[in-house]
Image (cartoon, rainbow, N blue to C red):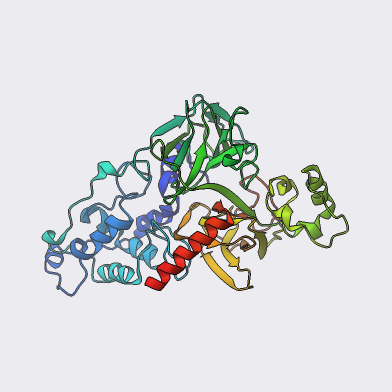
Length: 492
């Protein structure tokens, strides 16, 4: 795998637009359209798409947050002069839906913060390029964006910013490593989180990172913090960062709860990438106003591909882990007990994922909801061989509903897909994930299609789990919300 010899440049590119580097290379290689004569630009027929009238509004909505000076994007797209040399590269990336990054089947579901272009917008960009990329009338251009508002925090200014004190030096070469650093955020009262985001410094070398929050032993109402649920074990799993992540925003009435006196633990996974560098991550948190308490507490759940099959393929090891975790098992059962699927953290060490050389492999996992719940979002997580992942719900009546199908998964864009209206499910609804890994030469990200790949924490290993943010509720809360939705549907 080729490695950049300029770590600052590489980290900057990976900061926001890793996947765009191909477009820059293509355009630099001669695929950019030559400038059109000024007269032709000024006299474009009204029926033709022009930059000022038709293309610039699209770029402002879906592109300029990243494509501007001071970001990792390989080009700025603020003005006609900046965008014009990249016209053909823009068209190529847009019509193949590689940009803006939104890699799911758009015919399934609706999402907040969706930057993807409509078919009509794609046709407009293509028409503009095919017509010679005319400038058009300057009077048709919308006012420029306020770039000062396009800050590094996706959702505005946080109430609390906590940064590593020491940070970590990442060597140029060596194995992946998993350090941690504890920082006191100074929380003097319980607070509820509206949104949260991690920003690293060494984008090039951060495979992923978590921020965990400890819960003091003296804390009252421990159940409020959902310890033992999902990715919460003895700490609260506040947020995960992976390449392309833009933070977690919780719908009104939902949020995470942080305790007074809790300590933040940064837990990054580093992958050395050719040059020595330093990482000092920071996490920003926006709270609900003091005294405002959301109705539902959110927890993150990893639906790990591989766990469900292990009962047959690696049963002795799975039984041992479950017994150690305190499950009362029937050792003569022919299938894994459903209750053991509620918390699979103890099973991670025995998860099986088999991806033979030169093959495309499918794995799946089933997880019955232990309580009624709102499913707020979905984020697939795989490594370099990841190709596709879908999430579906199997309803109590057996009906199957695909919630999200990420058909063009990209390792360099770990996108969270938040549902415009969170999915409401009763207890016992099964969340089903299916993942596909492409270990062939057709996968441009694959470092070695000749090797067998299994489950592992290293970047060169593989994973296959779907992150889901879930807000559990009582049966009474579920009944009330269901009635509200049915009444709203009838009014429409």
